[in-house]
Image (cartoon, rainbow, N blue to C red; front, side, top):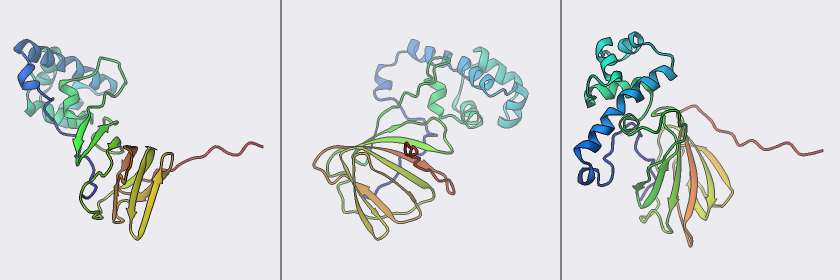
Length: 216
């Protein structure tokens, strides 16, 4: 199967088993945490309620009541707020502890491999860790193109990269970067599981590997 990138993180995906396990009290606690999180994000960015109202089209009074817990958040309200704050929607409804800068990736199964998003912003540079079992993907290689620029670092195992006319075998510790408008595909030829880091940038951005200068 041709390599594709994980879907844009600006989506709200149901947590595994959430419908079966969550009680009304659990859901209330999640919703109650949204207001403080919205206020935290706004203050972090130095944005006033009036400025946020102008950006989102939500009235100042509604924004104030959301932050104070006087109004329950709805999808209609949270979508423009997530865009304004440049965060994934699920960060607003299941946020990390206040002041905690750590990213807690949620593993996703994509095209036979495990993908862990390592970045929070829904635009700009995207970072992922990928864990690929041997033989992933299963189908014959088919090179694809899309907008952007990609940087790959093989943590362990081996990765086969088809890039235009080139057929490369990358070992652990090797790095490659390329314009994704060049036809490309990569997969794990085995025999071991492969782990890699992927940085995907918007069109026009380049990532550079910098080496330390030689010691005299």
